[in-house]
Amino acid sequence: MPNGSNAMSSSPASPAVPPTWTEQDTESVSCCVCGADGVSVHRLPPFGVVRCPVCELVFVSPRLTSSALQRLYDEPAYFEGGVYGPRARWSPAMALQRIWTAGRLAEIARLRPPPARLLEIGSGYGLFLAAARDAGFAVRGVELSRTGVEQTRRRLGVDVFAGQLAEAPIGEADVVCFWDTLEHVPDPLAFLREVRGRLARDGVFALSVPYISSCPAVLLGTNWWTLKPEQHLWQLTPTTLRLVAVRAGLVISRMVVSPIRRANAGRIDSLVAIGRAIPDGRS
Ligand SMILES: [Zn+2]
Image (cartoon, rainbow, N blue to C red; front, side):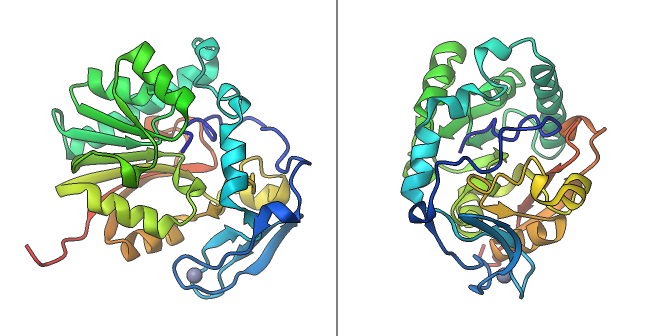
């Protein structure tokens, strides 16, 4: 998944719903945890934002079909408009990016210091991976965007697998990170189970994600700049994130919500969470 899509949370983004999508591009889905149909929260035709009546997980339904989503992610502008492009090197957004990277690496290193094996899912242009490598971690990445993979290999010399995590010939990792990715995946429960399957014994996972109980989301409703129903298929809260994680066999031990903490600097509608696998009792 693209890493930079929600990178500048405090700036207004492009309009939430491009005019090009129609009902033919959409499909209805149910809650990935309960299988229940959602109750309407926001109507943004052809999309809907709904809440599961059982577990309160918020998700988009109808949402873009996987083939329509692929068309969106194949659009070069999707990546080039982000803060990770070469032209953005000295922008304020890039300065924030460096602060997040340092803060997140410090949070991770407290639990699993270098030379731990670190896997980033959705490594974007590879800037976090390069910083993790420079900090002494043994890094691997997985990224869907060919532009991102090529940039990472050519400019940073970090090897990244191009494709889906399930196909990646990468063994277990001591640290698995995914920044601004969980809200994009078709099924976050299945995704987190896959993360758990990749974690070594005593391994650590770390993520960032926007949250729909944040002040901007509550105050702005459908005008919340991170709603983006075409790409943000799941809208979590601290409570529902913990719930989905537990269902996947993961427990969150630390959440950074404050925008003045380095790991989440300037991000008033996103959080950073770190945790471990719940032991399965078999070993
Ligand atoms: Zn549910």
